[in-house]
Amino acid sequence: MDKLKKKRLRADYKKQERQKFEESLPLSRELFFDLFDFLDVELEYQACQEDFLLTQTFLEEHNVDVETVRDFLEANGAYCDCEVLFNVAERFEE
Image 1: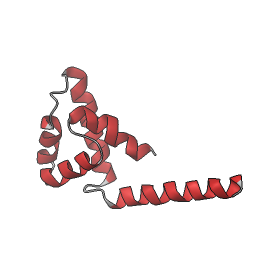
Image 2 (image 1 turned 30 degrees about the horizontal axis):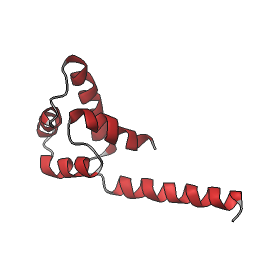
Image 3 (image 1 turned 90 degrees about the vertical axis):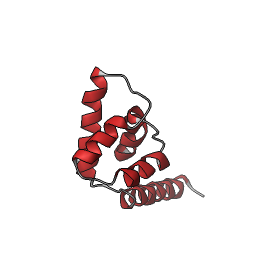
């Protein structure tokens, strides 16, 4: 297989993975970015407590089903507030 074909296949695969990720979002992208901003500010002033307390607070204030979002976050490698920023936020940049 030539290099150009491999490159195209890799690009197609990445595009499909991004699309699957986007389709699995339990919130709008905008609300996720608001969550990331909220966590970024809050975690500047307090250490992560290794739980989802800040995330839960944000979601409840926005009338969002916490369990659905938490399941999504855990499926994407986040098990506490700081991991939402480190593991999930970066998925939006891919």
